[in-house]
Length: 206
Length: 371
Image 1 (spheres, helix red, strand yellow):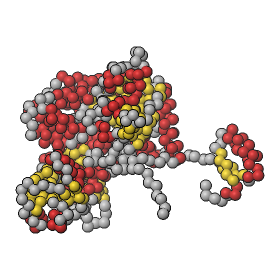
Image 2 (spheres, chains in turn orange, red; image 1 turned 135 degrees about the horizontal axis):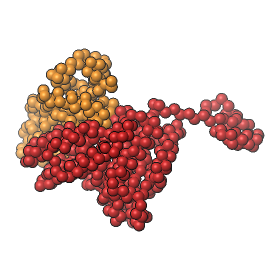
Image 3 (cartoon, chains in turn orange, purple; image 1 turned 45 degrees about the vertical axis):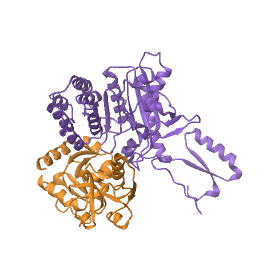
Image 4 (spheres, one colour; image 1 turned 180 degrees about the vertical axis):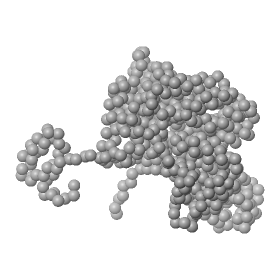
């Protein structure tokens, strides 16, 4: 039988994802970033686990080289891929926010925004009715306001401690973020029995 | 300094081995289409933007390549062929009352800035059956698409059928909240079940309506799903759509090699569809191989009201499925000549060509050079 190919995001979220599968009695022992292997076959569950960079998960799923995947809503919003969003797995829950320096007085206009998520940031500010200049960074966006590169940042926040350490405060919340189960449009139809079955099981433990 | 030439994203060079494969499937497709009475038409590469846009919803104009003519009119490269055929029929066949059958093989253009790596120019082979309102026209189109796929060597595929009236019927239930209706329609179209669920749950819809919408993700499967569906508290429009799908199933189930599944929530990319719609999937491709459906109101726009249905297959996806099994059996003969004896060699080449060989002439100074 054809394996169900599942793309998982590497990093912090991997452990949480595997725990969730454990709860529905699917133990993917040995799936780990420490291993040099990038995919793992489990004949027992008719499954192939593929480890990918979080931002690449929707791409693998869109092209159908993975049937389904687990990807953060932040990545999905930023990438706009043609994939089906099946379920909120409620993993890695956090928020997408606009943050500004702590000492910034209220109603100070924002002109420049540093972010890893240029599309989300731009859409947010366009809806607000004022266009801003977006500066794309690849990490440590908190540096933006500190070094005077930007007035604000758009980033994901879970506890808020990184913000605090860098003397930033949340100005507004854009949207909640969590991990989603996504599917390729063709696989969702051709392997609907297996995928629906998995969704049923996951629904029961969420 | 060396100047480098780049190719724009999303367009493709077809080199001879690929062209041979492409033409081979096109010949088979053309042959079948011809036998079924579909006559080929060639649509203009560009038309006024208005021709395409009124058939689309807001946001559609962003997906087409636009430019200006000398008078400043806005032109668009064709994003599909169906719209042009609808216009042609309304213009040239306004007093025909027998059914019309047309087919085409053509490149279309869609702007996909968001999705680098996906083709912005791609090739479609399609057929349109105009003038038959009955379900037998939808059946002919589905059978024709299946026959073509089979003849070009695709064994394993399913045809997933939906009905636009079912979706419209569902959405009629939320008529009193237009902005919510649009959001829900979009979520269903994108198959964003997470968004759909949160929109429904936070809404003030009646609980039976909520129940139907929340069950939508499960509305997919074999013909059994139609019996399941009818148990939901649906309005007349939805019920009519389901009974039409049932009739389609009853008429098609005798064809052993047509594998149908049903997905009443299926929405297609172009939004001129009005009735039965379908998409075709292969386990070897991540994108649909093609699709189509009924578009009974598209011709109204060009003042030539006629019921119509049709399909289009995407050649790139089909070729990617066939690629592994398709061999390129190109075997030309090389005839080497010395320039002094060129005419003699030419006559020899002609003689061989008459016998059916492919002959390429090469100056013999080139012997040993890489061909």
